[in-house]
Length: 256
Image (cartoon, rainbow, N blue to C red; front, side, top):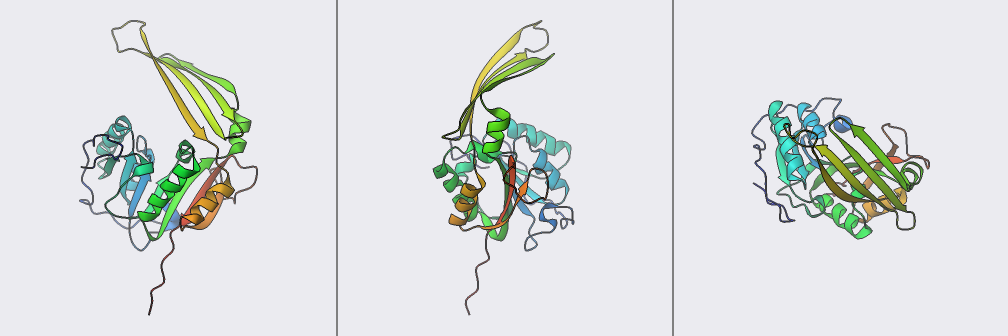
């Protein structure tokens, strides 16, 4: 079992490496394995949808998230699909692994929850340490275009039979920080009539720009393989709102 560096308790984990997986097919991440390794880490994996999908394609997956509740849901999903996945409860900004991976993923704008260059630098330094030589780092992030054009200073609302969600956004263009104040009304357990429970949350995200992110990657030793537009393999353009990044840890030359 693994203990979170942030003080969290480990959840029950499935075995790691006990099931034999075949080589990943041509439709898998990056089209092929890196040095015949199928070890992949999914940072901030949430409920494990992507983690399970890649495990089904033959990758030996590890899912990492700070939320025990999310990981428990992910573990149940993996068990239902008879997938052998290791789940770790850690803060990705302070993750500590026992080995390295052929690829590390950090998807669905998780990077935007890192709200300072110091934190981003620390995260990338740790990722570099736990990536195989020749291995990949793949992630996406939202830039200023998204926060200015789609979020801004607004109020959003969703309503359905089981509850409602109201959230306000406050975007500070100078700092690039967007603060969401969220109020959730959720129907109580059956038998409670029309009783609803209220939950209040506050979430902060930071707008990142491609120039800053690529400079930080290079500072920490990564090579940039490519920047791509949202949900496509088109090269990044200045009007993109979500950018996907593929970077590689170089292979050191052997001295003769």
